[in-house]
Length: 243
Image 1 (cartoon, rainbow, N blue to C red):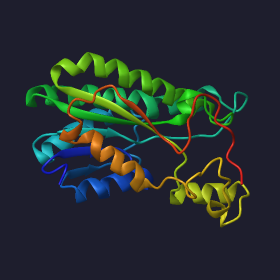
Image 2: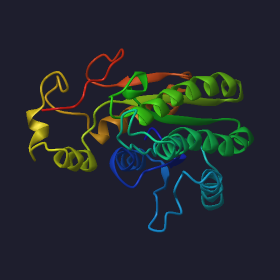
Image 3: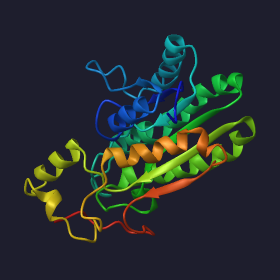
Image 4: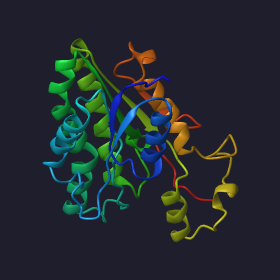
């Protein structure tokens, strides 16, 4: 078991990629602290007080925290004309400010324990992004800078900070979203090879296994890495997803 006895908090872990990571991490021996929005919205990471509460609740319940996965994100679709100040501020608050505040709150515990591990879940959209994902793409570009900056700053203290830039992943939410946008129910099987050279999209478990490695002792000397988990090279523009 590659994560045996590790206490790891995963934000946004009740659905999709986060749920996939939580299940695989648990299978690999980790004790996983689960986070979701909550029926009453008490887990909303737009609130700057929530990150510190999550860290302290994890430590209070389990006695320590060994790792943090910043997975929670919001994606409000919109191009320049459709992106107002409220939309932009909420996206940056959840996708970029919250990871910073979570790491900041976890750092004293990592220092006390002699080290820790952080994994930020980014996106290939951070390089440029789809035209209708402006705020989201900006937030993920900023996350990459955060990862590399803190890896350099915290590495000497034994805190590793790495990132996975996730490509197009088939989750229940993504399947439903594309149907609402007009795609047929069987759209995953109709994808052109441009988007799915292997014949399928990424699954949450594909992301989870990459995350297991980065959070494990096997990656002890890997710090500041930003790994693109996609089936094709991404160097700039991310074309719109159509069947």
